[in-house]
Amino acid sequence: MSPSLVWGQTYTREEVHSIFAPGTRFTPQTGTWGLHGIVAIPDRPGDFVFFVTYGQKQGSHHFDEGITSDGVLTWQSQPKQRLSDRQIQGFIEHDEDRNTIYLFLREAARHPYKYLGRLKYLSHDAEREQPVHFKWQIIDWNGGEATHPEMPIQPLAMGTGSLPEEKLHPSSPPGRRPNGQGRAESTQRFRARKVADRARQDARNRELGLSGELLVLEYERTALRRAGFPELAASIRHVSVIEGDGAGYDILSFEPNGAKKYIEVKTTTGGAESDFFVSSAEVAFAQVHAKSYYLYRVFDFDRASGSASFYVVSGSLEKQFALIATQFRAAR
Image (tube, rainbow, N blue to C red; front, side, top):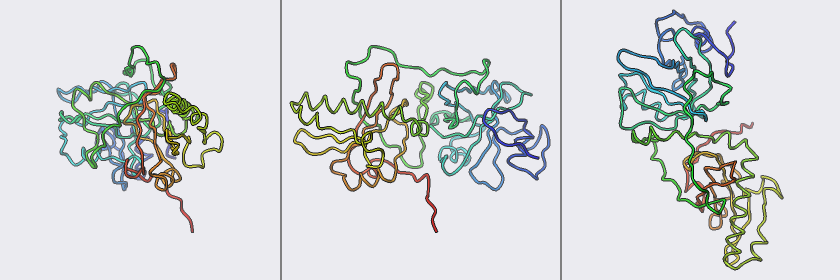
């Protein structure tokens, strides 16, 4: 009987093989499943198993890999692979909603591998190859529960310095990523930046969402008071709290001339470039009310201080973002 795949559990290569390629032959220390670090899953184009060993060497090359406290994996391809290789281009274009890459990691040779979950492509180093350097988000990351003290966890650098007087301070929207090019970074930026993608965690975190909405609520009220419109400030409604999530927006605010502002708030502890989820109701509402619809993207939220940065985009969401279908409702 084949073992089941359980997050955080340890497996031998043979056990992993029996999960993903039952009925095929396994030979220890040789062949695809017995030796390789990148293994394509049979009959599932675009799906892979990654076997990673910390401190591994291949010839004169030493693999420099690690995981941040937020589950960002720094990973290197095989030493001979180039940016132009078909497999590397496939990894750059990897869509975690269509294909799956499973991560199995061990601290030393001859140890069993620990299953740490599925991977989401974050970025790659556009200046180095042979090997190619990637950053992946471990989608199922549970922090320290997955690790042992000897694992080279790389702590995520946090900014320091005095906080601004306001809890919420504006920023410019990040540039849009060109289709099909992934998120290419210079070597300097690749080494300095290990920003986690938290879209799924953020979507499930109601406390985080509410915190961001309260920041925007106070920001809007303060702006109207400072502009000399205290009556309008008092009329702002926190719709998602009063009515629930069905309205298609979170906050009803106003322009100084009294025109309505329909505000949707998306909050993350990650950076400005982090993806986020929107519902079909939110997309539809933004289409109908494009002239008065505003999305406030609250990012770098700091729970300790209750502060964050944000940017605003207005109008129909499909004109501002690449909307990727992640679910379908099937009916007969």
